[in-house]
Image (tube, rainbow, N blue to C red; front, side, top):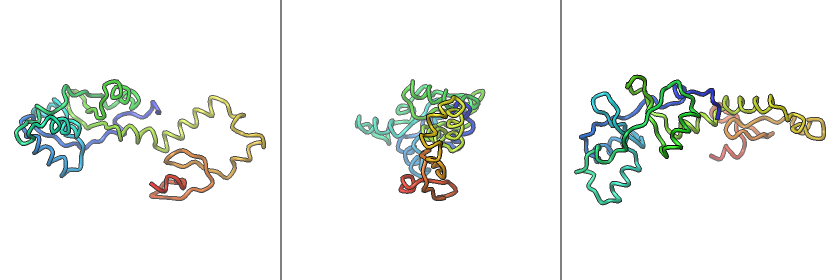
Length: 186
């Protein structure tokens, strides 16, 4: 992943917030209505936890009643946070180390948004990230090995898929991105 991409550039700015005293059932309905996989649990304006789909599944698996259980009983806590000017690579490392898929983004205890695993994946597969990675590879040498035995003509006329990074002759413009046949199927 490109260390130059910062959290602020890829984080999800819109989040759904709930109170600690809300019922899990009410929070789940809100998650469903908003189409999100988690809610940030707030005490006033201060984030104190996060409740995810996994927390709800664990609650149901334990046969607890979502209508009678409060969000504070089901949420993951303490909530981990990251500064918006940190690199996405650093934040992804924190997430992997802690085994979490979401981390809140704060400045001086002010909640700015949430960095999700999808945001991290998006940052690592963005066309600008891929092209910067390829530039570093070329800068590091090994260009002679890439040219092939025919003096480089085997790669002429090919372009790079903006989704997966594959080198191919067959690219098509899909929603403003040049994509290969394999990626068009998705």
